[in-house]
Amino acid sequence: MTEKETIEFRKKMKLAQKVLDQLVFNKFNIPYDIKPEYTRFRDRWIFNLWVDVDVDRYVSFTPSFKQEYQDFIDLLDENINSSLRYVNLQNDFGGLFFDYINDDEADVFINQLNQKLYSELENRYNARPNEIKEADIFYYLYKSGDENADIRLEALGNNIMVKDEETGEETQLVSCRDVDNIMFDIFNAEAISIEYESFICQ
Image (tube, rainbow, N blue to C red; front, side, top):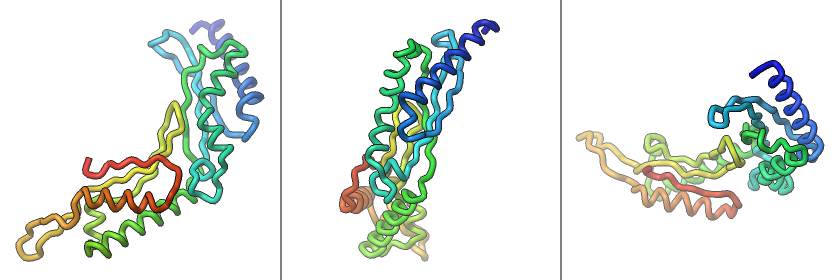
């Protein structure tokens, strides 16, 4: 990039930030960064936006949840593109990326969900904590990094196996199907509005 092109691109980034501050990010005062990137595909410089998403305000199962905030984040890419069109900078915008912050309340909920799961497996099948741990069974809050903010609850795990103390042979105590069903039933009983996806035995 020549010095002239560098100056012009910096002007574009400053203008983009001014427009986005006024038309998009002023409502919730959300932290974000504009970062330049050279793309070989377009053979030019573009800028990307990195936005901090407050998890506890975004997910519906925390005390800090705000519906307005969730709606704002979900429409962020569309609003950014619309705002940049006012100053003809939409073609200089590369993409939207997310960092996730402040998930303490969400972690508390996920931990409680896992405790319910482990208690159910212990009560129903007499599965020991070490056997559940070895099967890598747990709920996990997945957070996507780009394009659209995507936070979903995932079910992970495998068959629960037990080892005979005398022979050392392993037998199945709880099948993947049973683990999957239990995890879905516990999730369903919470009646929370979040995408759920199972990766049991995958």
